[in-house]
Amino acid sequence: MSDSTQVPTSPCCVELEVKKSRFICQLLPCDNKGTAKALLASVRSQFADANHHCWAYQIGPDASLLQACSDDGEPHGTAGRPMLNVLAHAGVTNVLAVVSRIFGGTKLGTGGLARAYSQAVKQALCELKTVAYVNWQKVELQLDYANENHIRQVLSQYNFQLEQITHEQIVTMCGRIDESQSAALIAALERLALVVKRLK
Image (cartoon, rainbow, N blue to C red; front, side):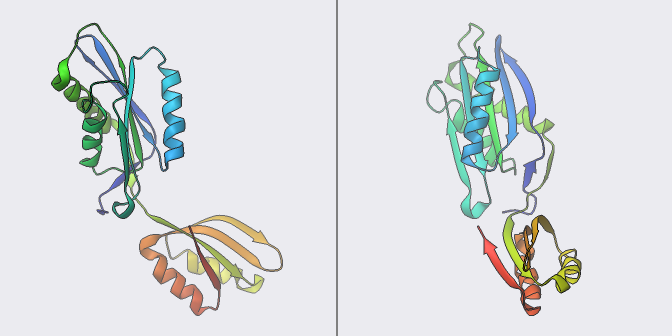
């Protein structure tokens, strides 16, 4: 995935009006299909008076990019696919786009619909706050109490985020490392005779 790929840090919402139809676009941080389903249900509830809730998402890095979209009752190919095309060319991932349309009484035709749904997503992208995408690798470290402070110093030299630590017979640290640095970090830790497990 390109070094310039971004992920959203917070939701954003914009509204576009075309011939009295309202197109309300929300861009939502989303890193798995289950979250996408839950977010879509929330949007449907939030805008229960909308005639359609068309959506598209892309999740993950290029090597395992997950994409999906839906026209939600609009003519085939006039909503979900145009929305997904905008996302695909925007350099953003881990994002769900939902456009809720409230019909204004005038039919737009297939071309008009595709333009309206695309434009709604484009306008929302202009407002979206993002940070650089990081592909995280989860790891688990097992170490003696005597080594804990030293290992923390080693970890501080890398983009490592500690998520959980337990102190029992040994110290177990669970966290995640920027995948681009994982090989170097794991090699450094294994040289210290630590038990390192890569987690999914």
